[in-house]
Structure formats: structure tokens, C-alpha cells
Length: 459
Image 1 (spheres, one colour):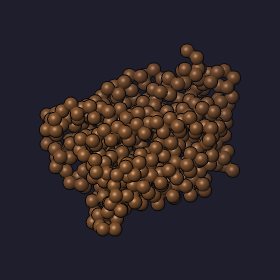
Image 2: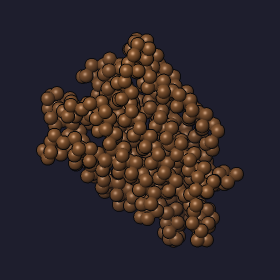
Image 3: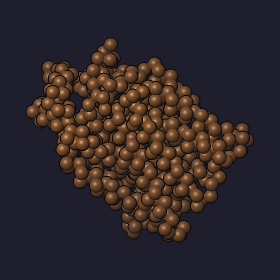
Image 4: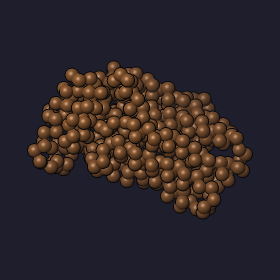
């Protein structure tokens, strides 16, 4: 097997963590339409059922840093695969405590732990095995896998829902939707045993011969030796025995910048659209209930296509230009939706606005943030720093998922001035801030090795 094929195969396997991320967060979208009626959930309780997994995501992301240092990126991903499988099985339990929302929430939190661990380790693992010239493209495989997960789960829930009557969907259809995740989670678990350990983690642990052997298989002998020397140089402070002070001015600044960028990805409003897409299409855009899941498939398809655009351009145009272009598109999309809502003229323009927003996010803040987070932190702090940044992202995700249905149902949002448009104008304000923050604080990382990026922060 040549090195290019080997690299693509292990990237694809580790990116399956992203597919399960997308599948697990997307399955609640199709299922919540029926389980909300089954359990007769209030807006606040619906927010808790949908957002409960995010509590697990936050805890999982926090635990992912120490876990990744202790057992490595590969075995951390194996732990996440086991958690995904347990969650998929438990969320679809057909008969034990059938009226208990708490049981469903418990297994959703377990799935969240898996997502939190995978969302930190998968892109970091890919970044650590990828050559600099291809790193941006390969890390976007993770985002591609996320949107494929969304697309596949929307297809799965659509066909499960359409094959059953409404009464059957209310009783057990939504349980089958959760169970469908057992297939990708089992596949992920099995394939992970065939990928190598991260060469940078091996070097961090002093296992240099193993590190060089894997780098050689990935990059070839000459490039492997050069890369290994750079890794050793970047880790020299570790080898002197000094402990990293994460609260020192320079290191804390890097972690804060990464965490703010990570948080801002969620405050674009993307997960409000993805988690509550069924509600948006039914209530805001006026589609009938029979059309809701079909519209979700269209949304997921747009998400998928524009992620391919990001993959093709992130190593050509750079990270920052994609953020600027995507931010402008997101603003225009939400303006179209917000104004039509405010003017009570819902229709084709509203739908185009939603799809334009999703397309713009999928070619910018979706994949680019994962690329930047996986490559912007120095070797000696990467595990902990990325763990903090990803945990901050999940905390922001939780805030959005909990507050969105409440804001949507509030008197202020539904008065004669806003007419349901308020959340989208709030998201526009955050997107404008993203452009300013990126311009001022985010370095361009295109084409640089992970070790070279350390020098950027020093300067």
C-alpha cells in the first residue's frame, strides 16, 4: 500500500468519529418531532432532552485532554466508539421504563461523552499524521464526515418515519431512529483497531522508534526524519523536566483565542437550525408536517455539497479568506430569513435564506474552525488546550440549544415587531463579531508545519 492510500484510509477511519458526531446530534432532530409528542414535552423540557447530550459533550471534551495524554489519540477514539454504541442501544430501549424521559436523557448524555472525546481527538489525530501541504484538506474530512452523518441520519429517519403510521412513529418509530446508530458506531469501533498511534504522541512519550516508523510509512524516509527532528525540537522544553504553566500570559492567550473562536462557531446559529430544523420548517417556513423530513434532507444535502467546496479550497485560499466569505453569506442568508419573518411574508425567499446560511457555514466556520483548532496549538499544550477549546464549544452549543426554543416561544420574539425573527438578528450580530475577531487575532496557518506554527505565536 502506498503512503497516500495509507494516509487517506486512516484519515477516513478516524473521521468516522465526525460521522457519529453528526449522526448522534442529527438523530435527535428527526426523533424529537415524535418523542416530544409521546412525552408531551414543554418548550423548556424539549430543550433539555435535545440539549442533554451536550452536557455529556462538555464533560467528554474536558476529560479528552488528560485521556489523550494518558492513553493516546487512538485509544481515546476507541473509548468514544464504545460510548456511542451504548448510547445508541440505550436510547432505543423499547420496553424498560417506557414512560421515563430520564432514561432517555441518561443514554443521550453517555452519547454526549463519546462525542466530546471524539470531537477533540479525531481532528487532532488527523492533524498530527498529515503533511503540512495536505493538513487543511485532510482535517476537513472530519467536518465532511459530520455532514455525511447528518445527511445519512436524515435519510434514515425519513425512511423510518415514512414506513410507519403517525401512531407507530409516536410509539416506537423514534426508538428505531436511535437504534439505527448501532451500525456506524459498531463499524467505527472495529476499524479503529487497525489505525496506527499518533507519531507525535509517541514522541511525547519518548517512543521515538515507533514514531519514526509510523512517520516513514506516512511521509517517506527523508520527510519522516525531517518531521521527527522538528517534533523533537518543539518538545525540548518538555524533555528538560519543566512543567507547562497553562496560566502564563503567552499560553493562556493562545488557549483563550482558540476557545473564543470555538465558541463563536456555535453562536453562528448553525445548531439551532440543525437541531430544530423540523420546527423551523413547520412553524417559521410554513411547510406541512409531511414535508418536514424531506426538507431536512435538502438541508443536509446542501451542507454536504458545500463542505466539499471547503475541502477543495482550504489549502489554496487559506483559512481566514474562507471565514470572511462564509460570514458574509451567513449574514445574507439570515437577513433573508429574518426580514421575511418580520414582514410575515414567508415563502421561497425564506427557504433560500436558510439554505444559503447552511451553505455558507459549511464552506467556512464548519470545517475551518476544526482545522484551526487542530493546528494552532503548540505540541506541548495541544491536548489540554484543544480539550478546553472543544469543551467551550460544547458549552456554547448547550446554551444555544437550550435558549433557542425559549427565545422562539417568548413574548418579545412573537410580538408585532419581531414576528419570530429576533433569534436570527442576534445570530447576525455574532457573525459580524466573528469577522472582526478573525481579522485581529487568528493567524493564517496554511502550508505551515505544526512546529512552525509555534514560532508564529512566539513572534
